[in-house]
Image (tube, rainbow, N blue to C red):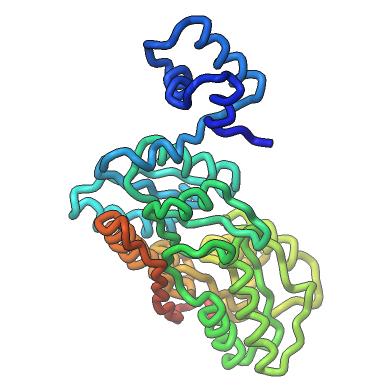
Length: 334
């Protein structure tokens, strides 16, 4: 069983204040008592709850922003939106990235709270069975916290788009253009966005009376190389292939287009490709990318306004939800 500071104090037969003084290496504790407390701390592998201690500290005029991928241009737009709003209100923004690892996300959130930031904005990783002690602690203490996206298990303020609706719109566009054999290149396995976009893909097929073919539901990933490698594999030397591909994001779509180019498969004449996010590069690729406009900068701005509102009203934190519109941008790839 995990011990808390009260348990350590009871085992050492000292006050909680004495335990705190020892842990924080403060003076005023007898050497024998200090050694006794330290021995108990080591024996029970006790780790102080930095979050709980930091939550009572005065304002530092700073916000912690935790994104998923430091090299993904989509998150750069979120960062821009958060920074613009926070800087206008005199707040510094600290940046961290989970790099798609749950453990790293937890460590980054806790590190920011130890730095005594006034609030957190997180683009969370997700799993339906996921337990996040850091998020649970923050919610319990009404710490200013906003998700760009969501973890369905936890009720927090959030900013997001309707991924199912947006994906369905993109696939319906392909169907209306005559495509009946449509593949989906999915994102990370721990991405709720990818799961929701897959759901939208399926709904569009079902409504059109088309059969879902599992062989064309490809577990790709979120990066350029994922689109390229899976594109090379799917379209290399096969007689039966889809006529269109809907991709989890623009990076995957651009990687796929590069793989098709190497194999002398024409886009969009032979294969139509649709991405998601509308990163800046999607307009300037060799074949401009048809994609879904994911309003990342606006989401960052909205999240920043929400967390600042929570900071200004610490006794009245509501779990607001903002759902922004996503729009299909038609270009040359489909």
